[in-house]
Every structure is written in C-alpha cells, then in structure tokens.
Length: 591
Image 1: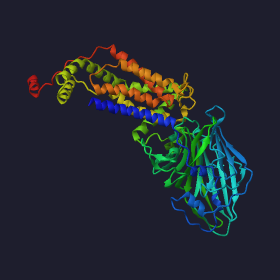
Image 2 (image 1 turned 30 degrees about the horizontal axis):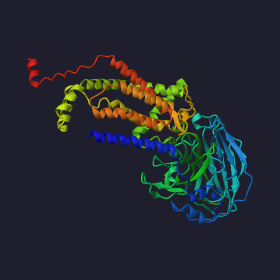
Image 3 (image 1 turned 90 degrees about the horizontal axis):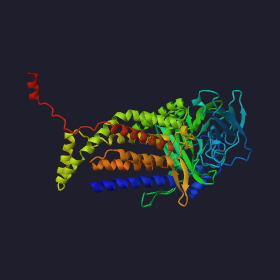
Image 4 (image 1 turned 90 degrees about the vertical axis):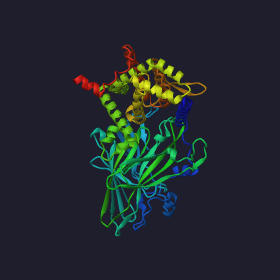
C-alpha cells in the first residue's frame, strides 16, 4: 500500500511539472497554410452591397469558403483612409472610414509591457471593431463618409446603388460614472429610400482582433468568448493548430483555418487576452452565430505569437420603402476590471471565466472583491494581498489550532503505534484495526492535521483563477516586484536560460521551515501529503503571477507564528477520555 501511494504521488508531481513546462514553454504551432492565407487576406465587403431583391438566408452553420464563393463581391475601389477620434479620460477610440468601425482603442491609463506608449486594442491589419460584413473572409471594406455631430458623437454614412442608406453613429460617455467609461455605443440605421423592399440577409458584426502582449503569456488566455443561455462558452488559440493525442502524439484533428458555430440567442461576444477585452453586446436583437480565425502577430521584440479575430452573426431583416430599421450595440473595449464589468447590464463579467465550478467561481469573486476593498483603504495591492492573507488566516486560526493539537497528540502516540506495527507486522488488517482503535481511545483524528491544508486547496484554486487575469494587478509593484501580475524574475541562469523567480523560492523555503516545525505524526500517508503539497504549490506558483506566491509566503509565515505559539503551550494529555456513564449508573446517581 505504501509503495502504491508513493507511485501515485510521484506521478501526480511529475504530471504537474510537465503541465507547467508545457504551458509556459510551448506556444501553439503556426496555423496551417490555409489559416495563414485566410488570416492575411484583405478585409471584407460591407453587407450593404447586397442586392435589393430577397436573398436566401444562409444556414446557421455553413462553410465560410463556400459562402464566400456563392456571393461574388467586387473589391471596393481604393480610397484614402481617414481617422476620427472619440475620447474620454480612460479610452480613445480611433474610428476609420474603412468600413465605418473602430480601427484601434487606445487605453490611456494602461501602459504597454515595454513601457513605451499605451495599450492598444485591435490594429489596422484586423477587421475594424463594429464593421458590418456579409462574410468575415470576403475581400474588401467600403468607404464611409463621416462627420462629428453636435453631441460629440461621430456619424458614418454610406448609400448603396439600390438606395439603402446606412448610418452608423458612435458615442462614448463623457465624465460619467467610471464603470461606463469603456462602454461606448454604436447605433446603426438602415434606411430604405429605394422603390422596393430591402431584404437584408444575415450579417456579421466584427469584434476586432486580440493577441498576447508577452511571449510568456499562456495561449489559453487569448480567447473568443460568447454568452449563451446564461453561461459563457469559449475557444482559445490552441483550437486552431493540429490537435494530437497526449503522450503518443498521434494526430487527432487537422489544423483549422477558421471556427464557425451556431449560437442562437447569444447575449454578447468578445475577444479577450489575459487582461483586456473587446466585447460587443447587441441591444436590439440577439446573435445567431459566432466566427473566428487565427493570425500571426509580431511583438515589439520581434517574437511571433498567435492571435485571433472574431465576428458575431446577426439575423437578417426586411426594410420597406421609406422605412428604416435602427439597431443598437454596446461596445466595451478596455481592461478586464471585474468591478466595472459586473455593473453592466448583460452579465459581461462572465468574460472573466473564473471557473466552471460554482464554488471556485464564488471564492474567486469574493477574494477579488475583498482585495479591492482593502486596496481602497491602503492604496497598495501588495499590502492589500498581505492583509487579505491575514484575514483568511484569522478565520482559519481556530481550525489550525485544533489541527496542531491533533498532530501533537499523534506525535505522542508514535511509540505506541510503533509497538502495534511490530506486534502485528504480519497482519496488516489487524494492525490497521488496532491503530484506529488507539486513535479512537485517545480522541485523535488521523486526518485532523491535513484538514486546514485541504480547506486551503479551494482557496488556492480560487486565487489561481482570479490573480491570473485581473487587470487591477497589472504593473502593481511591491518591494522588489515590478509587476504582481507576472513572475518576479530577478535574473536568468546563463546557459540554460532558466528564470530565477524569488517569491516562489521564498515560499518553498518557508514551506520547508514549516515542515520542520510541524509535529511528526505516526500516520505515513499524512506525512506524505504534508511532504508533497508544498512541492505541488511550488510547481503551480513558479511561473505564475507573483501575487499568488506573495499570498502563500505570507500564509506560511503566519502558520509558523501560530506553531511557535502552540509549542509554548502545555502538551495535550494522552489519558483516554473517561467512559460515558451507563444508563444504570445515571439512575443510581439520581437516587
């Protein structure tokens, strides 16, 4: 049994180390040639080029290549691109006449990773955010005329040869509630000034593109997300390359050049990276389809990373002569700030994707809200995390006290347990029965010492899910740590290029110190659990956000303090508890 336990624990640790190495060191391979060709093709034609006669509706899920081939589109004539801007204290939207959308969103209060300039969402090479297209892979975007309105909004306008006028008005809150500053609005009016009814086929609204800002970013953080039936669904950039079976490496699925899925009733869709997102919520009708494709993006250092762009399919409609149809869309382009997203009206905070398990999601949200509350008083996220740790420890202090006393009693029982093992070494079943009987006689819980650590596991995963994607910690400093949202690398070992991250090493050192102070129990399995849990935590934390290692280093130091206090208290007595009085004896006492 002991040998099997050792094998199981060793395999778990090796699996965790392998998982960590894969996630950090292996970005997905470049997309297939078809994907590259699709990703670098010119931008699409607007939906307004559709004929005034009724067009058959496309099926809910169809091949993008076939759809494009069945609707030949002439490339729009070349024209000079012109830019107009909308700006408030948080974001500047750069609007383009190329398709009438948002070319770039400049986040004014968020610095780029290299410290040069601001974070920019989307780019000129990708579909403009809010552009309306028939098929996301068709060849060109038409020219719109634009003018600034008296209320500060920007209006784009284009009239088709069939007499359909398309007006798109973009507006951005000015000095309103902070949670609204990143949430602009796009209003689209289709007005039919022609003699015939206009049958608008299903169309797509472009979500723009998203790509990692650091070569060390986890590929799974670059995602296309949509909300349907009250829950989020998503794919990440790992979906597009060749899929293989683990270990054996046999191909499971060929590389995919695009993703397309029916999503009738989707409330919103967006593209998301580790800390930022562009998210579009249709306010007049719900989405019916989701589309995405990969592209290669260049980082300032010259490295290539894999990104994705997306589009949201909307249902078609009919406009009678002299009538118009107006649609509204909310566009959020900004950081993944849970507090702001949660105050929007359509569950936009689900973009955070803390966990599919309700309990872990609740823990993540509670810890984030409490951390932000503490930060509102101390104005330092490092200090807020330390205070958060102190509060969690205060709640668990009585339970840890009880566990420490239980381990002390077990350590005092070690000689008796050794005697039982020697006495019944040829009969393991009898030995286990006698050991459990000994525990029961002395009121010892054999797993009591592990209970506080087991309770910490959901807290650990709640923090793991939360700290890895909250924009609040980005560029937050603490002592020598320059960015609590990234590993606190102090240097790399020459030759092997391995990062030395100080906080996880301090966490590991405090774990070893803690193990040396912990009373030795006679239970072999409990000793193995206590031995390997620190290794597992170290593997998880080493290349993760420094904030997580800061939490557990502080947690270890507080536990060491508690053990020091406990050791100065009298040892618990080992006398068996007095036998409970029988019914007969109680009657005698009453007489």
